[in-house]
Image (cartoon, rainbow, N blue to C red):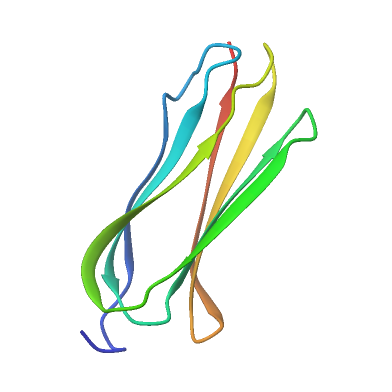
Length: 103
């Protein structure tokens, strides 16, 4: 792997996508072409004021890998916004957002 390889976000999903109130869910990202030093940050902002984030730093080149942030359940009607940021050498190279509402 070298720096000319293009990082590709293969998927960014929330599972389950419509959780019942009080049930946890996972924000899961699958990425390919990961070079040493790449940083994968997953963050959550809930309409109830809940926030969390996790950052993974790649320590060895990989063709692909998965990264997860587990989010605790919210009340009925709470909206969550999940954000993915991938950066290399301090530059953001990919961003994605996903949303859900607790049922």
